[in-house]
Image 1: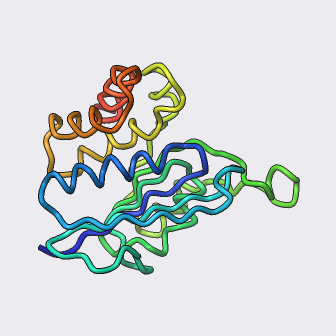
Image 2: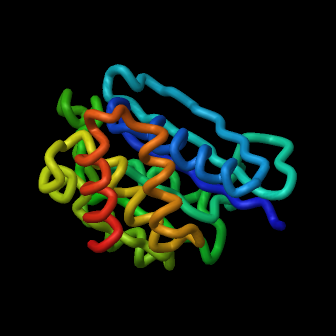
Length: 190
């Protein structure tokens, strides 16, 4: 099997690391060799966070180079735009439409770029954008954006809904299980 590559990108505190852990567990359960590498920027201060997930028959390196990502799963719109050069031709970006101002915008040194969805599509990229924050809030917590996005991702993945739900059950604390299952269902059906 050809090695597949996914980047999970977002802002510190959005749950990108839990999403990569959950995906890695699911892929291991399916018998793939999996490598996960986390790159933390100033994540505790709302900075950029990137996780590489690679899987296949045999994966030697956890790093994804420019032009190699089959999927970019983005938790924030500007982060989706920031990493587009890593997407391979024919790859897909799945992104939350939420906009979180980076420090240069907060301090007034820069403006948040406008019309990012249109610009990404105009560059010829396959963009699947949804308001994951609203769906997470509908599920019961704004912190469930990561699970909403995994629900959306599951539509494009070859695993059953039951397999995804089993991975969620193993990855989240029991007291948050029903909320996360609801968030997953909302993302999957959005």
